[in-house]
Length: 118
Length: 112
Picture 1 (cartoon, rainbow over the protein chains, first blue to last red):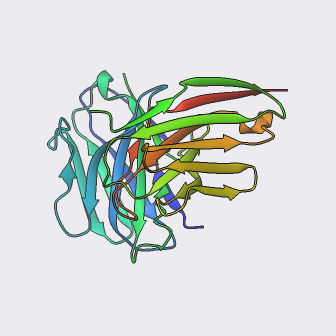
Picture 2: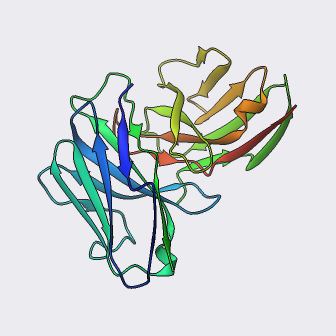
């Protein structure tokens, strides 16, 4: 199956600093990637849709200036949490949409990145 | 607005038993319904998925039942094993490969 890699898998940072999380599709190209956030014992909530070569589309309530998304190539999308605060501590998960879309419609998920802001 | 409602929130099943998780959706434009399994600290992994043109799909011990008129679908895990203990999420999307709307999740524990 297709592989989506996230890095780092976990990160601890001080309040006020910025953290970058990478999402890579290792063996396929992805014009679209999705970023989700998951709080403990809760479901995955879509934050934004990342489109290669264009601006990301953010879900309602997600601050685009705080969660910067860059999708500069067909295999890499990055999420930067700017001026992180303790309430940003969460599990961030990306998923990638293969191009062309598989007939099964399957999305492939990364292993997640756990952010802890002190 | 929660577009996909999942129940129960938690489930305890004896080894060898049947685990049943239910989901209901509201958006009639949804046409792809996957189930994901997630272990602690890991990303979700696709278990099985169904489209509205069939009422049931079976893969090994996992079966999805789909009721289009009721806008409901369920996951059945036959012969449940302790290794099946995880959180299960149903999801839905309007187009193949498009963004998913997830249910609230069900924490399954299979007791030996």
